[in-house]
Amino acid sequence: MKRIKEMPLASGLLVTINIFVFVVCTFTGNRLYEAGMLDVRGVLGQKEYGRLLWSIFLHAGTSHIFNNMLILFFLGAMIEKEIGHIRFSFLYFLSGLSGSLLSLYVKVRTGDMAGSVGASGAIFGLDGVLLSMVLFRGRKMETATPARVLLMILLSLYSGYTSGNIDNAAHVGGLLAGFAAGSVMCMVQKKKNGGQEASGEY
Image (cartoon, rainbow, N blue to C red; front, side):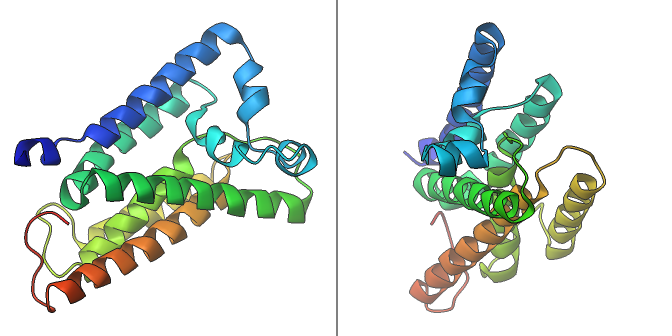
């Protein structure tokens, strides 16, 4: 049972679903993109609120999905092993939804009618969760320190802001949501443990 708990089941499943959707998109043209991309007309004009989540399973090209899925699997596996499948899945989708909401808000404020797709908001949320874990969890992680995680986040944000055609609002929204939710999770667990070092999975 312990071995199953430590396996990256949720991370692996998310990667598999994303790749499957990308393959389907490859053979069906723009149908899924038109039905699921995050844009103001679709969400607010047509009231298709599912786009807030569907869009995080769509990717614009091979390099886009390869980079996102590579990070999702390895970062996700590390976090999932520490907090479990259910909490990991909840934080992933919460971050993805939050990223989409902030992205939509910025699109409305700036009059941006372009659509956006990708799991980056949810993945930045995992960065935020990891940062909260190394700061507030109460016990050290072997391969992650606050300085390393913060540097990784800053470099990722910098890369987004210096590149073209990137939905940086989704990145920031996911990051903030992941950090906030992860911090609450860590503090609640620490309180349950009486302020002592956390041991085992939570």
